[in-house]
Amino acid sequence: MISHSQLSTLNSQLPMTFTIGILTTIVSAALSWSVLQRYRSRGGAHLLLWGLGLGLYVVAGVAEIVLAMGWNDLAFRLWYLSGALLIPPVLGQGTLHLLVRKRGVAGVFTCVVVYVGIAAALWLFTLPIDPAQFKPEGDIVRFLTESYRSILPNTPVRKVLPPIMNGYGTLLLAGGAVYSAYLFLRKQIMPNRVLGNVFIALGGLLPALGGTLIKFAEEDPTLSNLGSAIKYLGILGSVILLFIGFRYAISGSSHNT
Image (tube, rainbow, N blue to C red; front, side):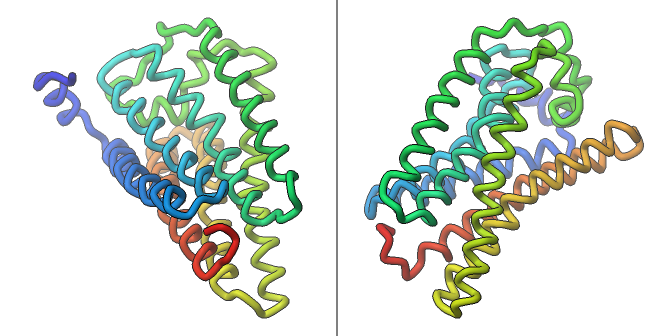
């Protein structure tokens, strides 16, 4: 349980970005619950994966709140696993299941993502990390945005795995949505799918754009606060846009929705 003194300390040190992070966690929890309830009543692998993907935002957010109160090994590993590795591919697989009708194709790719995710978790939870490098200096958001890599050893897996998983997931989520929107627009059918896929594409790209800004911020310290704020606003916007897109994409669809 969080003590009153911990809450008082936390409240006195809250930057605006941390408040945005808490709001994102609350919104993600509500939207994940909504999508999973729809899956419970109607089925559909895409709904299950989208709900789980939104739920991973909650895991990352709760882990961040715990880290704001001090170092916690489990919280840091869960934050990295969910936020840096799993969210894009899980959400992307949901889009793949919605778009690909050929039997078994999406399922095979989902199995691959599950196996890679399990391997990533085993790697991460056996990886020696350096808690002495945890120096948030009162701003956990800025630290996790810019300096979290200092805690992790500079291994080849760390260099390769996140770009592959994030690139794959973003390609499916945003690229698949753009391609689908183009096909439906060209055929002038299912306008709800067109609009839904536009929202999904925007939601999938926002975190990537925030990450690009962080790269600039790492080279220009004057942009650090702006970079962190825009990144976290981008994540909140991404969650909301994705949910809107999911709702539009499945409305009026007969594909197990």
